[in-house]
Length: 352
View 1: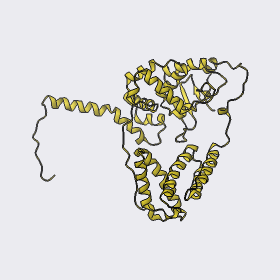
View 2 (view 1 turned 180 degrees about the horizontal axis):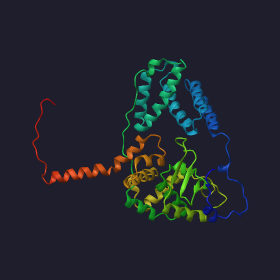
View 3 (view 1 turned 60 degrees about the horizontal axis):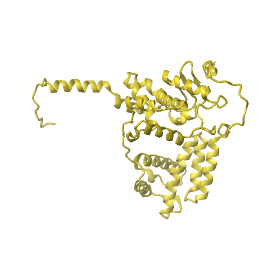
View 4 (view 1 turned 180 degrees about the vertical axis):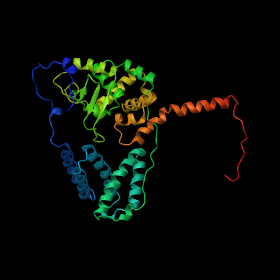
């Protein structure tokens, strides 16, 4: 039997006797958003008159037919479109003539434009997948990708918010809706897109858990949990929230909050807390969630499914911030060194 998602406790905080009103546009059901995105992108490709646009259109349909998400279709369109636009500027009118040097020149072109290595890496990945598809169809020669072409991406540490700054940030959030949103990000580790798509019926307030039926990034569902302070913030917001709105968070016009609006809200509170110069972003709340759990002693294998990572190696990045064993070993060894309790001679071994 399926779990009771809409808990009785939530019902007690909301009245359902209010008169019906016009359903807001964002709540209308769209039969197939991926199809709409594909058709829109297909039309744009034709309007731009790019070399090989018909192959790009066919490749996007290939992705669509394999149930790729609308966001994936859009990202591939942008990356492949930029590559084809570059070829057009170089005077290449037929994609069959593309060479390895053209791909390398495209990378250099994107670098000159000031794109970050991680952005170029993503675009290159989409372009290479597209070209491999053309190789399989016999459109271009396999020599184009016979040797590895890559962009080195810095392996930066995740940026977490310090406990003092977290307390300072929470102290300046005055609106119940905004406090509920920030605390839910901080205590569940949800991605911002997952939170903005969250519906009240996906929350089990009594058991303090959230059902994410399909993650927007990976397409994999999961269950996450929230703490007592996040529950208190949720209750405070549910007492004010319009019960006729099924989404957890909406704006003044009863439309779903966009990422841009959520980011603007977060930046406003950072300034109010005097933290605007520290480089924190909304995604840092997710980093903070993972780092604090690991610091509290939760095993990596337990943190991974909460974050929705398909590979534990992605989760392991957070362990570099919170490896208490390594830290304790370092200071234990350094204490012996500082006391002069290290004995023995160091000899240079020529065989090494």
